[in-house]
Length: 276
Length: 314
Image (cartoon, rainbow over all chains, first blue to last red; front, side, top):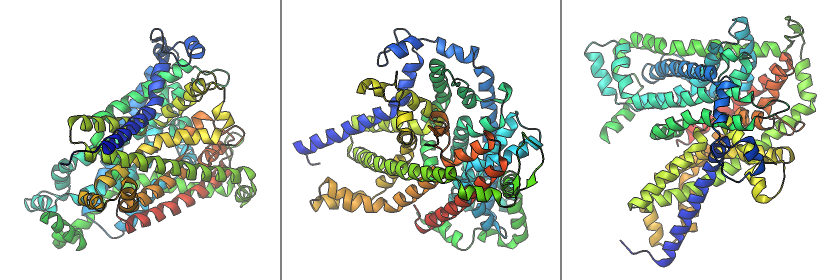
């Protein structure tokens, strides 16, 4: 190992410094929102750069007292669970089928499915609204689950099919020879082997569902079927923005995705790499 | 290594090479496994798109009447003549180009520095630092777009935003520089995606090549210009194309929450225009014509992207 020259050491320190500044800058918007969410409205406007004298937890309490965050949380959880189940189940089966059991026309269907990933969500929401209206599903979380689910499905297949492609085929062939049905092979051999991939898509599906705004604002007008994202918008009315509550609500909404992302960072980064 | 090659070989002979004897059963299994997803996608994606094509030739305003009336090509004639539509497409193009350019620029710089740090850091401090940096960089990606939008609205608020407080100004950024502000918020949200992908691409370059470059006396810039950049070019191209398609077709939340498309129509990006035409102005006929255009554009871009991706396996 060669000893680093003085110039080399300085350049390394500079580069590290630049990265640290960038990292702080990138975290700053969320960090500042945490600080802001703990300030009273007076503090917010009178001393923008100061820390709160004492944490104003009232902002967080107002979420539940004024803005129905109890029921909204429940709705968000229901929507996320529904989307994760649909995505992993349907997407996992389809990806495995496309990977292992091609049939006539399957390549074309796969390309078609993958292209739908690029569909503008706002374009799809217009006819879906009419369908959900006809089915009587407006103001029901089911309509939101179906909408987010169908938009999320192509991404799941996109990520999982190469994942199944890369699994060793020999184990599955052995399973077939031992008398397992093809579906048995899928369920008992491929699914456990693909667990990291399934966890990755489950994570991405959760984030997509938890953070979706488009479908709730299009399909829900009642509190009973409104998740957190759409409920947040109730805090900016035409004549008053409830800044304290808005920031507290923003942090409340962000926390679960951040916690899950940190815990499963490896899978999230893999999802990014496989997802484009 | 050898087992991997074997799998590759199998695939080139056709994925079902091992089970050819029961060809029929294989086909049925494939259909059975994919059918639920295909039915789901057909019912909620293909059928609605067909429906939107139908509606685009009709007049339908649910508040006024439940009837659809034939409108011929009038919705498309409106679309072709409308200044609002043309303006919206222009705004979306500017938004996409500038936002993706910023993401790629910042992403390349940070990814290069980060990769260097990771490669050079053999001591505990360096490893802990790079871990911590990566965790910071993932935050915008993991944060909900709407939360990021609220954060930026607060950062740039003329009365209590820290940006104006530090500058000792009272610029209402989202009204005075609406498009630039929206782009800043969006670039913040999406740069980590670019950063992580390029970071992985740089790390996968053979370290011996850097060693060789150093022996040849290359300085940091030359190393980047003649080794790093050419090596990651294929990934760079696909990521940029993907981000551009994504930005163009999916930008919605950030604009909806911060400016709502205003002031005037200054930030009325195309997806937002579709949504407002349907849900604010309740003109489903015109909204459908816009949606058809959006679907055509996204299908073309999507097909192009699939082709690009196949050409350069990233």
